[in-house]
Each structure stands twice: as C-alpha cells, then as structure tokens.
Length: 437
Length: 144
Image (tube, rainbow over all chains, first blue to last red; front, side):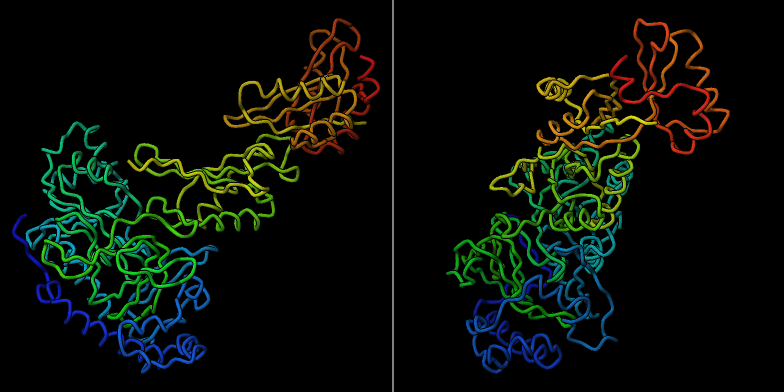
C-alpha cells in the first residue's frame, strides 16, 4: 500500500471509542436542537412520548421514528430547517416521487463541513493541493458539481468547473491543463474514455491519476473499464442531497467498501419491511442520521439504498465504518444520467396532459455509455388523430412536458393499445436494459 | 355529403399491416380505398370500407385504436386533367388539403375517386365543391 495521507488526520483516525463518544455527544445536541426549533420533529417525538433527554446511548436512537422522503415532501420547502432563515446560505434540490422537488438547506458552517468531507475524499484518492481537479458533474441544484467543487477548492487544488456536457471541450481541458483528478458520473467517465479514443488520443496523452465517480449505480467491471480507458484509479463516492451531497462516503485505496464519515453521520442498517435494526454486517436499507449539520438535520432518514456495513478495521488506517457497494434500491426510483426518476412522475405528466390513459412503459438503455430514457405510451382512441402531424405533435407535447418535469431529455414512442406487457392486469412499468458492466 | 373513413394506429413493424387487414378479411369487410401515412415509428392506416361499423368493431375487438372521420369522396372521369381541375378550384378558393388519396377503375366515366380531407371541410363543401364536382355517398362508392 502507498503511504497514506489524510486531510483531517485526527478525525479520520480517531479511535472507535472516542468516535462513538463524539457521535453520542453530537446526537444529543442535534436532537435537542431539532426538538426546540422544528415543530415537525417535536410533534413526531411527542407522538411517541419521547424527549431528547431519553436518548442516553447510541442504541437509544432506535426509540426515534424514521424519516422518509414523504416527510421531506410534506414539509416542503422549509419545514425541516432548524436555523433562523437568515442563517441559510444555499439550497440544493433533488426530485421527489410526484415531481415535487425536495429542498435541502445549508448554513455557512454546513457548506464548510461538506467541503471538509469532500476534501477528505480527495486526499483519500491521493490528491493534494498540487492536484488539478476537473469537476464534470453538473453545476446547479444537483449537489454533484458544487459539492465536489467545494472540496477541491478547500484542498487548495486547481479546480476546473467544467460542469457536464461538451465532451470535446472536456477532453481538451483534461489534456491541455494536465488534469490529475476527475469527478463525474461513472457512465460519463466511460463516455469520456471512448471520446478520447475517437479524438485520436490515448490515456498517455492525459495526466489523470484518480477519479471519484458516483451519483448512479455502477459495477466492478465498469470500474476496471474506466481505469483502463482513462489511466486512473477509480473511486466510488456516495452521497445524497437530503444528507449533504457527494462525500457522505467514499472508497479508499483499499477498494473494499466506502468509509462513511461517522463524525457527521450515524449509519444504521434496517430490514426495509419491518424497520428492525439488523446486526452489523447484515444487508438491508441504509438509514442515516446527520449529527454535524445545522441547516436541515435529518434524523433516521431512510435512504432506500441497500447495502451492508463492514465493521472490521480498514488497512488504510481510517477508523470510520465502511459500507459495501450499493446493491440496489427498496423503491422503484431510477437513476438516469445522475438524475432521480420515479415512474410515478411520468404517470403524473401523462394524466395531467389529459391525453393519455396511463398505459406506459419506461425503457432505460445505455447507448454509447450514456443512459437513454424512452417512454412508450399506448395510443388510446381519445388520443388518436387521422392526421400524422397531429400524432407527432401529441408525441412532442408529451415529450416536452416529461423533459421539464424529469429534468432530463427523454424520447417518447407511441405504441398500439394493449401492447405493453401486463402481468396480473398491471403493466410492468420499467424495463431497465442497462448492462452495468 | 361525406363518407366515413376509418383511421387506425399501427406500429411500424413487418407484417403488422397484413395482420390488421386480415382482421377485416375475417369479418368479410371489403376495402374500397386505403392509404398509409407513416413516420419512423408508426403509421396511420386510413380506409374507406363497405361496412364501417363491422370494420370498427372487429378492429376494436383486436385492441386497435380506431377513429372515424368524415371525408369527401369525389367522383371523377378517368381522363387526363380531371383531378387537376378539381384541385385548381380548391386552390383558387384558398382551401388547404390535409391529406388525400385516389384510386381508379377501368371505367372511363366516374372511374376515378379521390378521397379528400380538408381543413375547413363543411364550409368548403357548401361553397366550392357543391356545384362543381360530383360528390359520392357511401352507396355510390359501393357501386363503383
């Protein structure tokens, strides 16, 4: 193993006992604060007859109810903010199940904590202030771009805010600026590797050493292909808008699980059906409690991501617990080009257009390493026109509504009635043809 | 006077048109005129048939989306210039044709038929076509 360096040595190598004590201390503070400042949390706790003082150990966290995406929707947009409004300096957003966004609010200290966690991730990949970090995640409401950017600047690296798209320019930047670290989605990394070859270059023309890739599912095989194509070591980064954004967890050079920053988060694994906390090491749904976040603390938030915790000490020296590569989701959420898509959003668009009976199917494919989303819609008698232009206009109208609600471009294909396969009367909504290898 | 045209939504794939016309054949429906307007993914099959009620029923029974539209059927002499003459009239009146299709038989007199769908159909029929051309009804078509 290479000699390890750390961004925040004291925190990252903190002995487990001290780390647990820090977690408990921060948990108590967080609970007291949300009880006092957020009526929604106070009501939830009162319903269960619990007061912040009842939580005396980390295990007592189990006394508290779970928080789900639904709670975030019900309190949209600011209902879970735990600080005076004047202290919020930024919001990010991600899509919810009904097309309504979920808003996350950050204080200046939260932004700083986030950047610190991201800087740890970058250093974990071997980066230092001499690094040249190209951020090819989208900048905007999506946390990827600004999240990675904040960490890279905090590290003191030369940060290149390339954002997503314009592949040729991305390649030129990588080559001309001698970029050493790349941050983007894994599918985009593969796409860049192919574009590199098409432009007549090889990985030898680049100076890349490492890349952190996340915001969508990927596999070991993809990792190997990305590493071969771009000549770098690929790291898996995890995060979600509700909790913070990228840098909730990341793989270290041991490539055996993602370290969850436990000074900021408490991770639990539950049985998604019963809600029961599973013994360490068992596979289930990841539940996260934020304990170092002021703007919008989340208590026992159900991520819907399936993983397991790896409690053994890691060879890299970091004491923070690891989770395995994500194994799936407990709901029907799709992640397409880094954007969360729920089938119900598509249904809502079709219903509200007044045109279509909601017989549709979502087909996700990976074409040239980029996800493509096609919505097949059965043509009902009501939709039918004797005019081809009328039908094309209908298709385009539906596509434009879907594009704007989903926040990504999709294709619409009109199909004959009753051609979408139904099982037990219910249409199979999602065909995911992406081969993640 | 108009006639009923049936429009059917058909996906663009090999053999599909054969299947759909097969349903009509099984129901003993005869097709007088037919056209297909197509895009890459789908087509709209438009037909004038001898029994549009049966045709519609059988296609619906096979799960197809069917729509009935009133169109104009114009009977023409089967000779050079007869179609051009009618279209010239429409052009002069500033009428736009949404779509049309035509077929002919061996008969010289009224041996040609043009099916036309116009944008402002009712008005045009009243003012332009009424006196100038021979409009066909469903029975006329059956007799052709």
